[in-house]
Image (cartoon, rainbow, N blue to C red; front, side, top):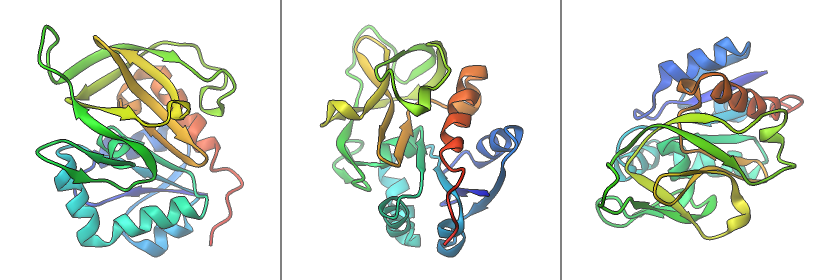
Length: 208
């Protein structure tokens, strides 16, 4: 069982791969379609600007690979910017089209009393009692760094939120597609436990 960590030039690959390693899973950092489709699950990390990230994915053909992996039922987790990429699009520096795997768009935090970017530890509020991602876990704090947040089209996609002057979409999931706006690999025991619960979904996934 191997976890594919997608390399498209804009991911925090080192910290994510070390987290997967600490959890005892084999991983492969790759941008190759065959290797990604052979993996048991896919991690899509991301840092930087939404439009630049989508351009990198399109230029490498990895946008189509992500859609294929999701469509074939492979567990897929977007992390930080990677979560935003799963959605229809973003208003960051104009209108940008996303992967369209989940309905919704990323919008900037409004200027006001709160600092932007949202940077620091915030408490998660779980919204799905029977969600496998949350199995055995209690609500706690995780580490965020972002200036844009996702406005969901479908509220049932929400697994957990955080409060930063407004409810912030923190964990989402539908079928085999999941996202975490925060950095689980930098979020202590709770972050690692959430990542572990996602990777458990990969167990029993056959390679193709």
